[in-house]
Length: 198
Image 1 (cartoon, rainbow, N blue to C red):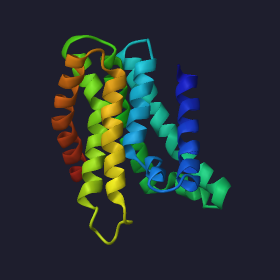
Image 2: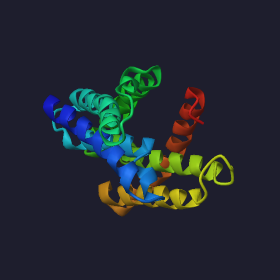
Image 3: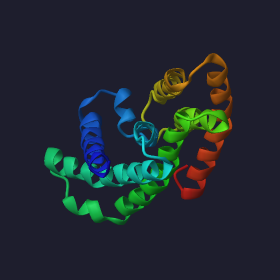
C-alpha cells in the first residue's frame, strides 16, 4: 500500500500540472483545485482495505508526494526552477497535504461503512467541492480573477452532486449525505479562512 501511495502521489502531482498546462479553461481549474486533491485522498481511503489508520497515512503520503511531483513536472515542461520544491510555500502545501490526507483518507474508509460514519464519509467529497464552489462564487466579480468563474461554480457543484450519487448506496443515504455536506462545506470554508486561503 505504501508503494501505491507514493506512485499515486507522483502521478497526481505530475498529471495535475499537465492538466493545468494543456486542458482549456474552465476545466483546467480542476487541476488547480484543492478539492480535486482532497477527493484523490478520499478515493485512496475508499480503495484501501486495511483500516482507517493505514488509509489516513497512505492518503497523507499521496498528497505530500504530489507536491514535489507537481513542481518536477513544472521544471521538466516549462523550465521552472526546481528549488521551488523546498520553498516555504511548498512545505506549507505538504503540511496541508498531511491534514487533508488524514481527514479525507479516513472519510474514504467511512464511506464504505455503515451508520453515521457512512453518511459523513459520503458527504466529505461533496463538501469540499461545494466549499470550493463558494470560494469561486465569492470571487466571480473580482477583477483580479479571470472572467467566467461562475463556470467553475457550476462544475464544482455538479461534481459534488455526482460524487454523492456514485458513492451513496440509496436515495435516503444520498439525501442525508447532501444535507451533511452543507455544514461540512462551511467548516472547510472556515478552515481556509483561518489558514489564510480565503
